[in-house]
Image (tube, rainbow, N blue to C red; front, top):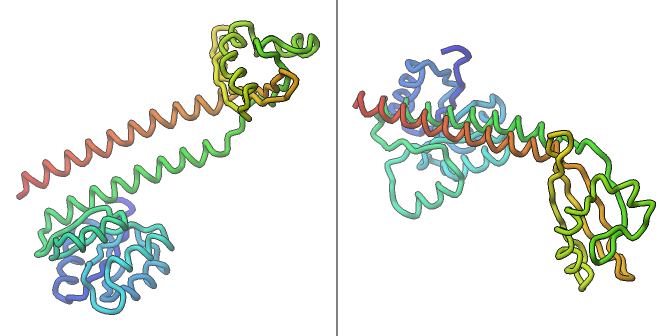
Amino acid sequence: MSNPKKILVVEDDAPSALLLSQILKKSGYTVLDSVDTGEKAVRVASEFNPDLILMDISIKGDMDGIDAAKMIRDECGIPSIYSTVSTDEKTIKRAKETYPYGYILKPYDKNMIYATVEMALHKIEMERRLGEVERRNRGILDALPDTFFYVNGDGAFADEVEKREASNIWTDKVSSRAVPVIRVVMAGGETEAFEYVLMRGGRKTFCEARIINAGDEKALVIVRDVTTRKTSEETESRYRSDLEESVRSRTRELTEANNSLG
């Protein structure tokens, strides 16, 4: 396994901690440490930044595993897999609120541990990739500046000069479609959004118009070219679907492998 993932084991039963560490190391992971309290887990996670934490829910001390996992996730962004002997409703409900990446029931089974850890790490990687796409998209600005003009209640330009300058983005067809929105604004609404698509040289241009009541039976229209944003959103949506399918496929493979081993 190239660049083995780093895992922190939180377990207050020494034999169980040793068994977990051995199983993880034999599976190719790097075990950072084995700690026996929530406080130690928070400190080690903050210092060494593991990729994943195997957290015993019922560890000793003032901070149980659920509280420790929540603090680590909130402060460090590191996810956890819970290990537990308890399946009571109250415990499971508390655990679910911390968004764990899996559960391992005691006594430990090496095949189940491997499958659960692999699925969790795969999900983490998919979320990391998706996060990169989202961060890139947040930095994308629309390609063209806003265009401003006034229209009458029928959607026609209120000024001939503005008509000459903006008729290429506010066509007769677009203005006709916008009439119901314009009337809502003029009847007392404040601002309404209206989206439409123009065809330019065989290519789609996505536009967003904000329509504002300007008084005197007129509306101010602010049009922005949002093609870049729309294209990015469509790309992100397709990428998200691909990632989700990848996670489902990987989950099926690991489940089938685990069943065959069991």
